[in-house]
Length: 396
Image (tube, rainbow, N blue to C red; front, side, top):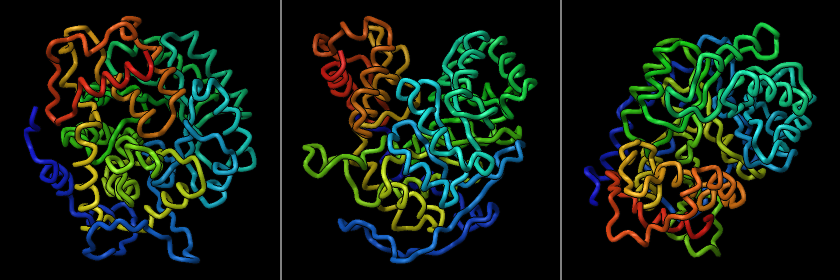
């Protein structure tokens, strides 16, 4: 199905906010990169460049955080986490289930010497009060800390995913001094954010947000931010893809030198985002992400992202929700495509397989090739049947 709008027009629509005005209000430094054309040459960090740190306050929490935080989910090297803290990054995010619990243990050890200088968050996907509080105690033990700054109810994509006893668990944890602030993380639609704004139960919301998403997300995020709720952006790279190696057969399709840095810079210029949690698995990715705080988003970045968006258009699910309930076999299309991104974009095959196995059992039995015609039509041009077939081939 042909997309309803051009990719370049869609991207440009997200750039209406005046960059200088938005960044100056939030304390960003402005340093234009000039009207450069996209290049095949990798971007190089100037020799001896000092690290430039920018900060925002996370909603009404009062937490002052660097605009580039650290998403620890796929990091296995503790030295990258430690160096990030030494260089001044102040926000670090993990979760109870990451790497079967080993991620919290690694993050706790890596940040032990800096605990009082950083903001630490973790998450639990549990669905009831007792399980949540048990997870929290385990997280505190693994992180070697008496408290976490933000504790998220994890992956709550529908209002029905959040019950009153779960919110009560967060309030109990606050009273016990085990958490400072309550959060909710979601991969879902603008409607979930708008519901969250009305509920007013959370201090911080962690949500998917990047240059490839429907502009309706801007309105939803603004609605949440207007309540004083802090907003943290994840999946800011629109699927990753920078870890695809030149020897990989999909390299030419997925890779654009500089696209990941441009994507991060795009999110940083948005006025309602408190901080971001891009994944960083090595020192090169850490160094590149740090650059985003000192370089303003330019015409060059816009052109890079326009080109990159054209490449990932048939591959990347924007989590718009328009496909929900349209699969004749009852498959959770958006969740499956998001999981596939872990494998194709981040090269985390074990993580992707694990998440796929958490889907309802019939996902492993259905084969999209058995359908005469796909009933799912993506308005953004994602080749749904091809992507679903690939997920089934890899994980089912």
